[in-house]
Image 1 (cartoon, chains in turn orange, red):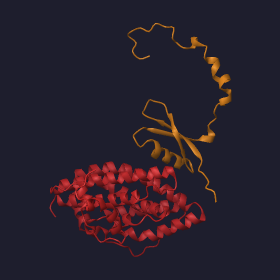
Image 2 (cartoon, one colour):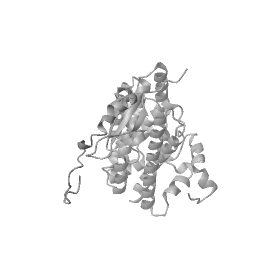
Image 3 (cartoon, chains in turn yellow, cyan):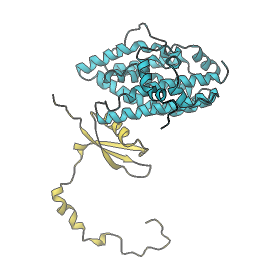
Image 4 (cartoon, chains in turn yellow, orange):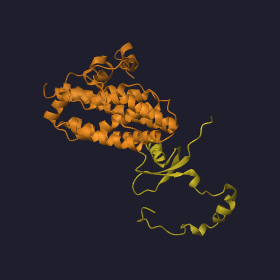
Length: 95
Length: 252
């Protein structure tokens, strides 16, 4: 009998309050509860997080690598979309 | 018993439970059915070893005879260990070790909760730290028991057999001896009668959710708290203490 693999889940972790969740990796799990436990046990052992999201990998809709050119390259020559043409006063520390 | 002897002996017993269960779980390292479960088991084992270190170090301080955590863990003979018989039972299959964890941890969280309110500040502080770890362990182990019990026909039958097999080691958790009485009377320690009622209700809820049957009342094994252990314990100690027995005083 071949072994049936558990479904794959993607793990997102918020490292501290105020920051957004970031992709940390993935785990296998038989159900949602187990995915949350496995994510906790795998990715927060060194106090990396204060909040975890898990989502079934198959539920993520991803862009097609073959369409990279159409999706992203048109933005490359639109430098006016970056706010780089302003003098930043010395008094402004965080920008 | 002198005033400091009670917390010293009591902390040693708590350390013994944590150390021996931690050692049993260490035996499972590299033997888990799944990679994620492997990490979880190793984490939990290290949590227990960490608790044992705190309890032993504190016991050594109370005792005032200069014994360190290592002396407690590696230099005592079998009869001086006062852990519950339940935690020294062999790992068996995954269902056996899961049931062992559920039965012990559902008792241990209640005990630690009571200890956070006891009058011995040292034990209360360690309990407050340990309970956070054990609450998570129990969540993990009880979820697994529900999956096994409510899983396939085979997993259900094996989980029920594990439960029936280990049930006889649960009576000892509530059988108060002189040390339990002293801890309760003089340090406002855990009331094992109250804990038993709550434990039965909590465990029954998990077992019901797992679609398993609560075992009948039966003869209960005891002796661990008095240093009389089951035949498995000597082998566990032999492996755990091998290095210190062979090279006394060896350091990492």
